[in-house]
Length: 219
Image (cartoon, rainbow, N blue to C red; front, side):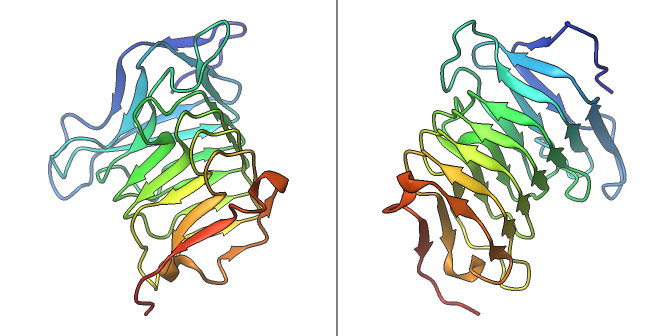
């Protein structure tokens, strides 16, 4: 656990790689990093957090962060200074969650502040802003929960899916506020449009760049 030390932020250089390096046997071993409420994490240039990145299917990782700030180490922050938070396919899907937090000034990975690939998790009640790319970027990530977030001032789309979810496990994208993102408010695939995509709001900046639906066979 990363403890909250008053007026002592954590400065991250390089890659924090969360996985169980000694894991073996049917994915039962998971290294979980929990960040205590009030923790502030400042990333030096090119810093990042990756979860479940190893090719060994038994070396799982998970990140739990509630009321945590992830930001640039700069005195005057700039978008893309640090890479972002990435969940790979050996992250523990049922455990990963970022809630009531702030994630800003990432995107140096060329993708977004928060990136899920072949994985899933919860991003709830969180401010996701000032990425040099997307706010939240997802590839092959079914059954995601992106709820009650404020996703603003990102250099690409607010929420971007690059592949379709399965029709039986559409993402829950509800009650988010999206504004002043350089791209669309959201980019989703036709299979992702369901009753679980609802009650989102956007500012006037997205009047002509609302929800982009990528055509595909639905069903």
